[in-house]
Image 1 (cartoon, rainbow, N blue to C red):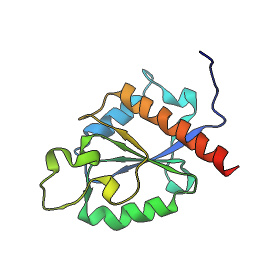
Image 2 (cartoon, rainbow, N blue to C red; image 1 turned 180 degrees about the horizontal axis):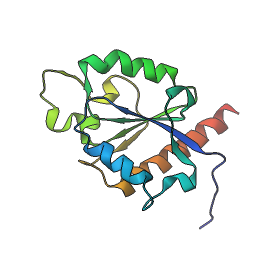
Image 3 (cartoon, one colour; image 1 turned 135 degrees about the horizontal axis):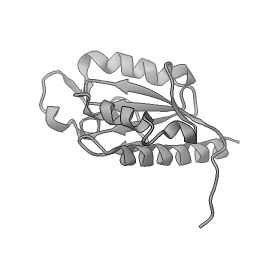
Length: 143
């Protein structure tokens, strides 16, 4: 097995579109010293204009639809969208709620799915690595 280094750091913008915050807590666990993903160059950023990956948690509530689209458009190309948790993938326990516009992939295109309620930190890290590989392939195709 050959080891390959990534060409650059991966900056992630986290967007909660109406979740119960279970996935958000697991994302924070990924940043703590136990997992410490920043040592690999994975960093949360405060603006979508600086992000490579848009990390979305929760189903999209109707009030968030224009905001999600605007944040997606503000993220520079090449970009990837990663959905964390069952709620963002299929609606989860909120699937019949009157206030939902639907899962994330009905609003914006999604590249990586991380299932679970909530997914374990290891699964989130695996999803970010999958996004990283897809992003590098996209950059090679552009170049």
